Picture 1: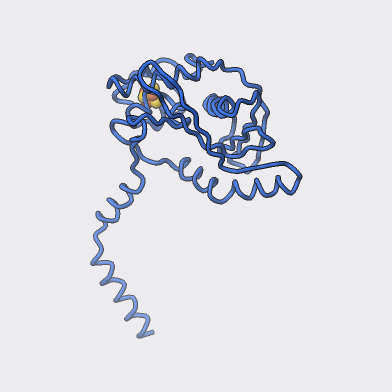
Picture 2: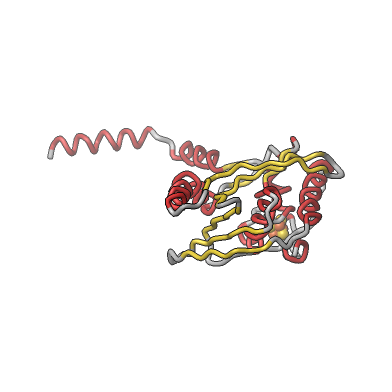
Length: 224
Ligand code: SF4
């Protein structure tokens, strides 16, 4: 009992030595990001599959990692290798985290477009999302991957809040020019220091740049 009290006292002293503001600052720094690769000519597919105006602001001002981004990181490190291994046992060729890249010429600069596909199963890209339904920006992301792999189909799977999983197969339907156009809009915006037009979507709810933006149109008004 006496020993316990001694241990508790040590903890209190230790606690008194720690400044909470330093812990808070460390957490803030760990979740802060800037899309610094874009000004140097590298664009990731995920930079293109949200509101381009938001991506632009994230280049110039930085952004904070969200819960869904962290969930995505866990999926990449822990879940995808298991899925690929199980599919291999079923006789499919399945590779997780497939890096792809291609050079895209735009009016403003040549872009090194990069992507990391969750799974490629028998040459078909498979994207897996934590979401209750398949959304427009999931489709756009998978379109980019199918385009980069030169295949005409892709699969999107969603992991729902209740644990249910649903996969759907799609045929490519967004013209190549539209995919290139988004790359060009973003590249030129960053080069010319001029934010692109707003693209209203689910991301507006958590967008830290709302106050700088009058969102009027949806992503689908621009792309689909
Ligand atoms: S508020 Fe919406 S439309 Fe405006 S920058 Fe943010 S995500 Fe884009």
